[in-house]
Length: 310
Image (cartoon, rainbow, N blue to C red):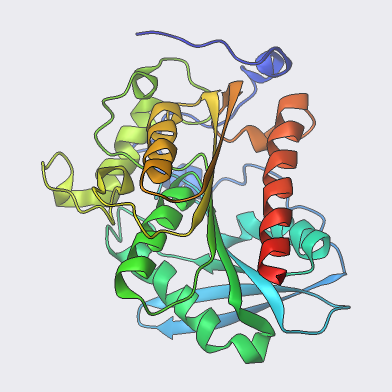
């Protein structure tokens, strides 16, 4: 199979990435391994956990700047992990910084993981968490008319699916969606999805992630768009979008295609592709390419919150 060159600043990291190909045998070990040290968080943001439901057990974490009174804009965040690993704690550092930078409330959701809970369970959890945030807006100091959603990798796929469900049900207000290297297409028939030697997330891990998430639906011709948003035939009426992906990411082609289709459907969409950047480039925070990746996202978020301010 083909390979793709990494950005020069990332080549030294190629042999240091500790994530192997995922499968059912290694999954328990990966879940039990601390892949990074817990981040040092600021005392300028208060973090509180709230139970959304007990059956199924769904929890959200609310991040709020201590020196600001509400109601504030809000960003609802969905963590990554290929639908099979990860926790809402992965969003702690990002929301710690963004809550202070933008003067917002951040809410992260702890959704159930596959394969124990396949589609639609994780998406149901994400919708329930967003519903809770809207229903409790006054309690947590959120302006219901200034809400955005975001997600990384599988969280980006869930974010895109959540936007579709929000549009179709018409119950909740969402003004924008930030899709960070989203996992959108179970078919894996693009050129980039077949690349070898991908950093962080291989095509073998991707197959396992989709098999776990879709369960009996995997390989079927008729997979719901809410399960794999790349399959959606109607993208009209979705909230304004930002899509970012690396040129050395297996999701590159499906993400570019999704952004193009959003724009063709009349959805204002900003697409950023970073040559040589792998999946999860933000993990290499000190490199130039990762700094640019983050800076562009933050610039777009700032403009979104300013737009909503009116």
